[in-house]
Length: 125
Image 1 (cartoon, rainbow, N blue to C red):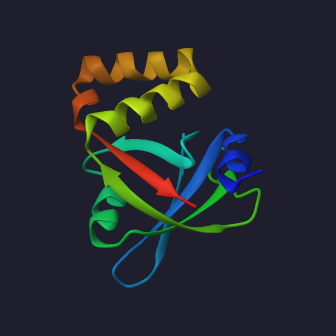
Image 2: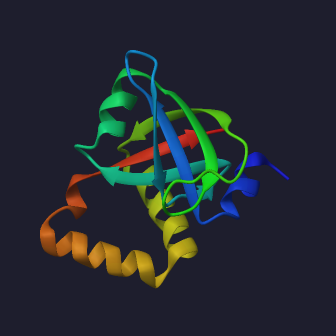
Image 3: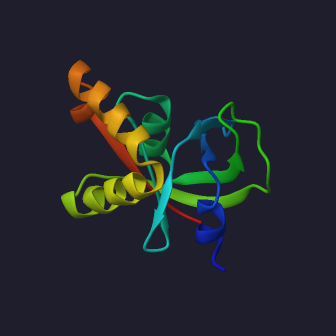
């Protein structure tokens, strides 16, 4: 079983990105696997987006909603994606995994104008 598939069995992922100083900043996120990659979305103004613009270095580990890690950290490479094909693929994978919860979150984001300010992250473990 690939590491991507093994991670996808979990509900949350702790995504650690790195500051210029080398310090890791971990955040629990929703994620889904597709085509041997993991996909995450976040606010386009978030710290992890700023850190990923500087460095693709990342680490991932399964966790709970509060970010308490429940498995081994894995080194990863993460990048921001903005092409429609990748975003459609990521959205479909997340919808298949989270279903009505993602629909509800998208509805709220659409009402507040945040839906179009999302950044999409592709992670290779």
